[in-house]
Image (cartoon, rainbow, N blue to C red):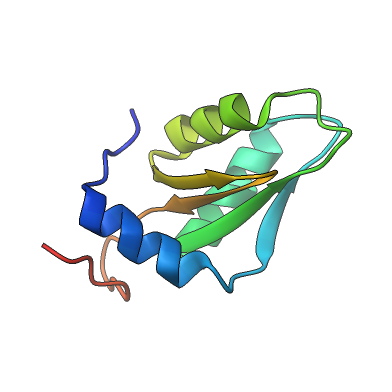
Length: 100
């Protein structure tokens, strides 16, 4: 189940994610268990990550974003072009403070 973001929180995350480089890439294998594990690890480290869908990926970018968000229990903040932003609050030491 993906977490829903309120408008102001989504805008805040999009602003923070603007200058980020992609840390996870979806390639010709699509969304695999290894990719999900790597995404979970990146979310635990960074809280907000950018994911790139490569041209050879066999999945639609929106479908890949939704599936990866659901499988990592994270929030989808934005899909823009072939990249999307995922956010998951750190369980013990959150660094990103979302607006109320």
